[in-house]
Length: 221
Image (cartoon, rainbow, N blue to C red):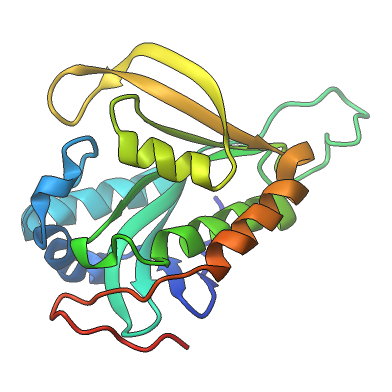
């Protein structure tokens, strides 16, 4: 099982998801439930307790590494994200990659933010932390990102960080609105990482100031 880790910079901290985050996540999601038409985000404390339990069970089964997203400016939990579909491939005996102990590929998914964290630097900094760790610590061959094909905002955000569109998987899974969704698939390969890192750094540098739920604008470090 991948050990829980904390990833952080001056804008955001990604901390290991735990049952202690249930109340804060529930409050963050309740700011504007209408945001989550294309993404499954529960409402209410009981539903979030089940949500966190399921994420931790996926971690125990080696399928995921979940995080709570904490805004550094005010230490407020503003959403969640995780590595999912973490794969370690079987390589032929004697292959240079046969002895590796880190993942070969992973996906970044199950990402959502509160209303107060939208249109701020939180998402771009969180993605930069996740993608950087995957390529530079795990040395994965690819990072994948997927979203409902109808989710224009999510697709634009994925394309903005430099991921390339791989295509659609039709009728891939149940959608959050009860229909069967087509999934838009994107990826970044190891060969593309250096160029994408420059793009991510530039995106993170042009950061906006996040608005908190009480309408104030905290000063970023």
